[in-house]
Image 1 (cartoon, rainbow, N blue to C red):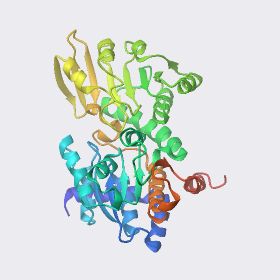
Image 2: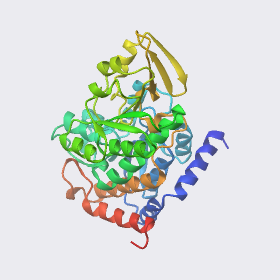
Image 3: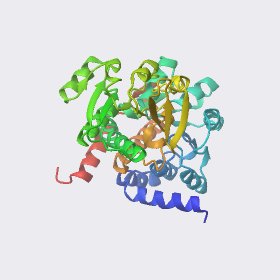
Length: 391
């Protein structure tokens, strides 16, 4: 057996053994075959937990045509998916143009249902004029939801269930899994202590809350940048210093973005940061840190490790960028992503939402919308039973 394939199979076997929620969904899908005769187009991080979701959909009769998200594809998982007979495009080390070409290949197969992350598939389907064929789909992220509402206001003609709008995903995956995972990624990549270091978390949504909480629990000194006055108040009540990026740029030693907005950390902040400041991004798109401006300002750049770049400024200061500004959890070497339990919940949300889109699209409005409440309740009840059987 090919070494890459064997590695992927072994990793997926471990993940599958710990995803009890999806195991129950798969048993149901194997009987009902809800996706028989349907093609599901996929644009999602291709890592072991995703593979378990995709095999669950295949058990339900689906044909899968998919690609990974930019910079996070794991080649051993791609080897397994192809071994299983899925139509998969992409590999880890590709450029942006090749990534967009892979998304285009998925759309060329004219899928009936879309499983999207960042709205690449939905946007291209509408631009390609095949939206009339599509029953609906899901969107994993707030970034993708924002993109659809900005680019196609009131013009998405089929239902898109936004998984990130589920309170379950916000609490379990975003706050606790992303928060913990991002802190672990920073520690692995830099090999530095959190204790006593000064962190600036830019954005106090669910992922930002989680990062701030876990950095604080590890002994970090944490400040928050947030524009929304209610979230700013929440950050103050949670015990964090809250200020503008302009004031915090000279103070911080680590800067972590989680905003779903472009270029929130840019030239002015780079000019004020202290020597040795480290930059990391948690957002879906690699644009929250203005890496183009950083490269333009630098008089020298050198690679300090697989995922660390050092930028020397004209005044001699050096700034460190992690994972080229891409999503820190999944773009790094030995990326693990969110915890198995959190993604088990998140992917059960995906599976049941795709089932709803396919089986009862008439119950859903066109365009982006929240996960149906009955799906949230079903999954919450099941997860509480698994974690606290006496509750």
